[in-house]
Length: 260
Image: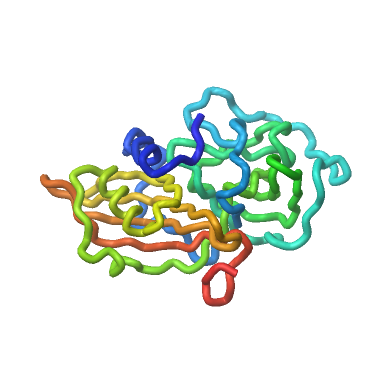
């Protein structure tokens, strides 16, 4: 079981999951700009029951009990964001891990599904604040399942922009991990962000692809950015050719595509 970690550890973990079957190839896995919510990374650290290794042997409840009634839910109901129908994506969960979808808000409820990082989610509009380290929970729909996830692991993507010009000259690296390190270090000039590899890195047709969530503390509306990088691969290593950045928003997206 693992949690989001600093860049060096995230890169090492990503190298171990390269070419894993769950990391499906995508021309550009950056989400559609209309997709959605999240808690800032400065929130209390997640408990061990929220994120698990994808290879964990314990299965979620096959026949979940009846969901609790509204009056039996813990915490306090929260009105407003995210509203029903808001599309959400999972952030800060490494490519080889899963996020638990629970029957109710809180880790005391059974896990009814194990969600890989690329699972699309839709908010139902029911949100609960459990207080303190228990955090805020959103009820979401994931395929045919409806359950609860802690808000710190979901975000609303804002604008998707080509930011390749920011990397001039294009960095080169001998290994996949070094290329990811170079891109994140150039993107995060402060050195305070946490980087989590959520896709890849994979090499197909002499092209390296990876997707990295770079989560920066200190802003209650912008959680960070999801970087999708492409690099040419040859016998000498890798040369960056393209980077797109998707804003990760904690409180919604304005008409411009920027975080509200």
